[in-house]
Length: 185
Image (tube, rainbow, N blue to C red; front, side):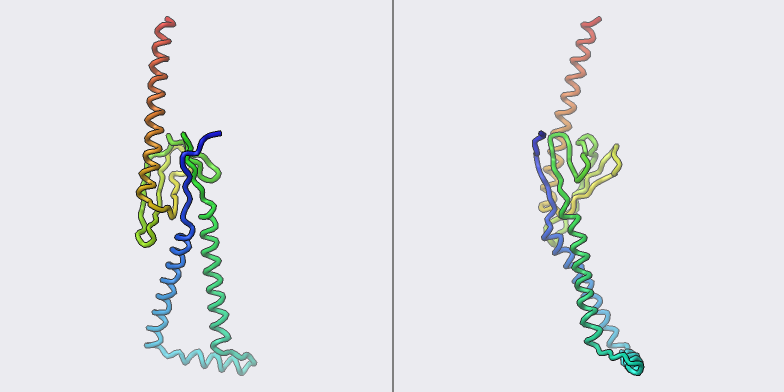
């Protein structure tokens, strides 16, 4: 069995917090727009629609519409965040001596071309992007990684050490093969 050199997981708590901050930002923008519209538009039109519906036997009041709409919206937002982070929670990146295992597929270190990172200053996390060559995927992105710069540097050192050892070994094998081939003749 191969030994695990490092294991990396996204920070789920910060991912959920990030999604909640995004949702709250949109909610504040929508409330602000509704407030500004209420200053310029008369919402009495909705009373006319409500009174027209009451003539047909439908009793509507503001709480009968607003409370279920708010509850449905909150449940929808929570379901969205859960689904978004469920896949993220299953993300597990395992670094072995010669490869990176990401989910169901292995990535040999020789297929890794470049590593870049992007910091998210609000939550002190970030994304690490690993560019690949000779594989079905062109790149993979590791989301919500703590200490992004330090982690990306550690991954880069791990891969560079492997490649240096690999090329040194191949060079020595080539020299030995060349020597053995001369003696054979």
